[in-house]
Length: 239
Image (tube, rainbow, N blue to C red; front, side, top):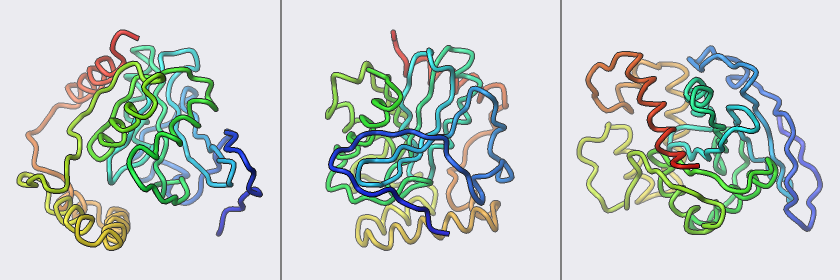
């Protein structure tokens, strides 16, 4: 079913409204963490009618952290930081980038163009400045955003950021290497391959993990939670 779009306007006036979830976004049957009262899914509509989907975790008066999700990820990554955000007094704001999750496709001629979406989200939520946290494929966007709107960024943390296409990929999972190779040589096929991986994740999650996950030692659950809290605390800096 196609989503109705408002008529285009001359200015990108941000307008946030509660998001309506459909299909796999409707529940946590895909392993998504449970939602509570301090988590709000929202949609921002740009002046031209394009939708930007946003996940907000934490209390409205908490210290804001703008989360730039990874390449094969979405705004829903914010849900995994929900407990840590509550414990540390942080508000995690996670927009989907163009063409990802619930955000409409929009051509970006350069990484810094995404700062436009980031600024619209901050304006709509009445946030003056944030700590930026970029994870994996979101790292370059976070860095470009910090350079484009430095007056609104108090700190920047990059976690395993994606580097230049010419950098070696040894040690990465097979699926990740394939996606990067396609994105470098045939960008159109790169997007297609990510779509196929998403379908595979729904139908064969165990095979999806073998293709996309790098081998890691077993980490106890409490250690993973502690690490999430540490990342958020370091990202927020001295805010």
